[in-house]
View 1 (cartoon, rainbow, N blue to C red):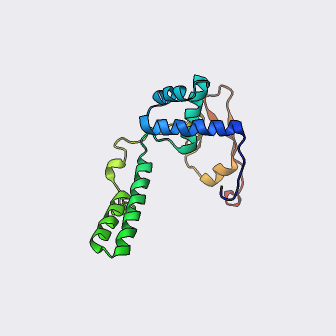
View 2 (view 1 turned 180 degrees about the horizontal axis):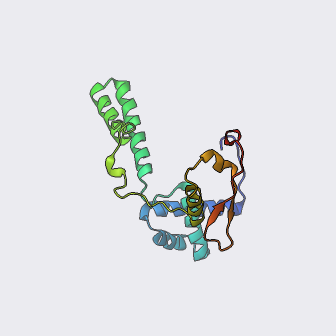
View 3 (view 1 turned 60 degrees about the horizontal axis):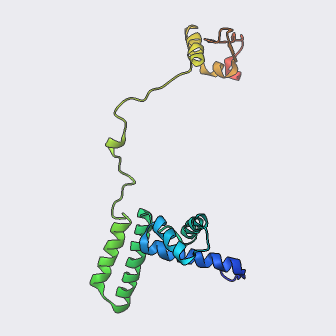
Length: 181
């Protein structure tokens, strides 16, 4: 937050100091338990529980450096490559400039245009299973028993459930012009 200055109280400064130490130890050891053990030697008057909380807070504040993240690695490679590209441009080194661009293209997969292509291996090899509720099957069977199905009439009809709950039967059709529905 630029321009937003806040004054830390002495207790807050002590917590911030523990978080900074915790992050330093995490960076060196890449292990939470070892970092807490190191913090215990550094801050013997603070409970182990509080130190574990401080390590977790430091990870949230400064970022997790223990777990590997593909996206973080890709971003780091991009930053280094862009810096390298800018240095090559400033000195006029065209050969290394094109190498830096090739690294950027490969890192971001922009050399592969997959948007218009269809991969048939991604389709299902088995037909999908379609489940139709019993009440819908009953309504469809009742419509088919009439000999023909006018879907425009289906919109105007209401279905009602027979008492046993196993079938749905459409309401009787009104004798009128179905084209006005």
